[in-house]
Amino acid sequence: MTRTHELKADPIPFGDVASGRKRCEVRQDDRGYQVGDWLRLREHDRTAGAYSGREIIAEVTHIQRGYGLPDGLVVLSIDALSSNVTPRAQGEAP
Image 1 (cartoon, rainbow, N blue to C red):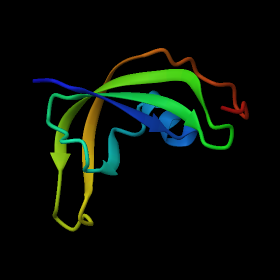
Image 2: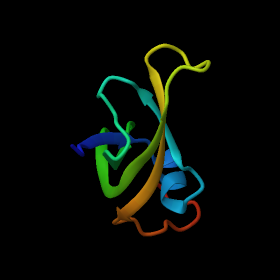
Image 3: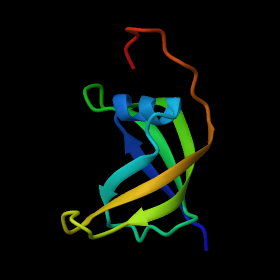
């Protein structure tokens, strides 16, 4: 059964996923992630304590546990499926 996990993403790593430069997420392994699950990454500014409204839907294509990772962490390989992201102008704040 495919599940969707709603996750906060800081502006810089969110932008890297949006641009295609970043194709993985390192997360706490506390949600029972499975290959085929979807991530709803929502850009969140910690300083303002608010969401920007930008989001990306990505599919989990591979999961890495162990092999030198600290206990409780997981690396999720992802493919972005859709987004409502428009590129920011250089120097524009999130």
